[in-house]
Length: 126
Image (spheres, helix red, strand yellow):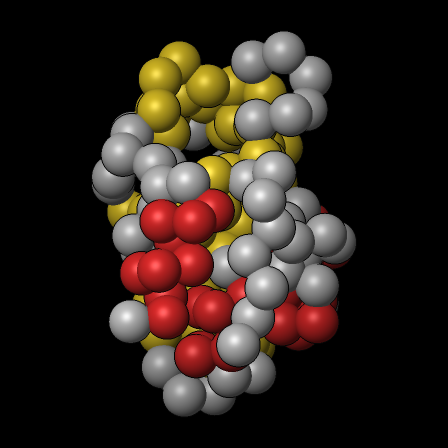
């Protein structure tokens, strides 16, 4: 069972968001639960810097040795930064999904439906 960091918020689609960064900029990634389920991640398709994204909409793909999964945005806003290190070496998402395996940083306008760590832990345990 993966641990669920308590300083993050989550989506039902297994993305996490950290709103504790600089004002208005949040970091987004996929959860350890998702990374474990996917297996070895071999390719990331992420939106470009400057792309407008909408909460709940597909913003990219994660390809693993097992499958391809869509990424959904937890927020509405504009992509401020893409983790090029993760694009270049996608396995970092498996080894450190809540740290160096983050995916994008977003200038947030509004949030979508987010889960607390407790709600996400209950969802992913079920």
